[in-house]
Image (cartoon, rainbow, N blue to C red):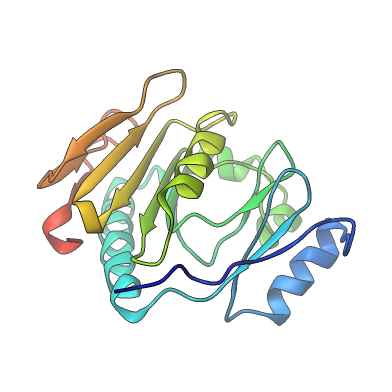
Length: 195
C-alpha cells in the first residue's frame, strides 16, 4: 500500500521569486518535481517511482514517435516547464505543441519555462498521487489559451479522463487506446503499454 507522497508547499509570503529566480531554483534542484501555482505557491514533489517513470516513458515514447512522423509539432517530457497565462508554472508528464506556436516564441523564451500552454498535455497518476489535485491541474490547463486536449491517466483504476476546452470531461473506463484526433491527427495512445 502506498501512502501519499510528501508535497512541500511554500507560500509566496515565505519566499517570493522572480521568473528567472524560480527557473534557477528548479535548475539547482533537478532531481525534484517543482511547480508554482497562479498564486506563487511553490510545490516540491519527490520524483516518481520507477514503475511510474517507466509508464511515463512509454507514453512519451509513443508521443515522440508520432510527432517525428507527423512533423507538425514538438513533443516534451516531464522535465519541460511551461508558464501559463495565470502565472502558474507547470510540467505535464508529457506534452505536445505545434511548431507554429513554438516558433512564435523567442529563443530566450524557448530556453526557460516557455510562456505558453501546450496544445496537448498528459498527466499520469502515480500510486501516491491524490486524484483531486491532478483533476484541478487538468482544469487549469483546459482554461488556457492554446490548450486543445488533455488526458489524465489513472492507472490504479484503469481510467482516463479526457479534457477539451469548453466541454464536459469524458471518463473512459479501461480503454485499450485513446484516439487524439483531430488535435493530433493519427495519434492513438496504446494503453496496454501504460497499464
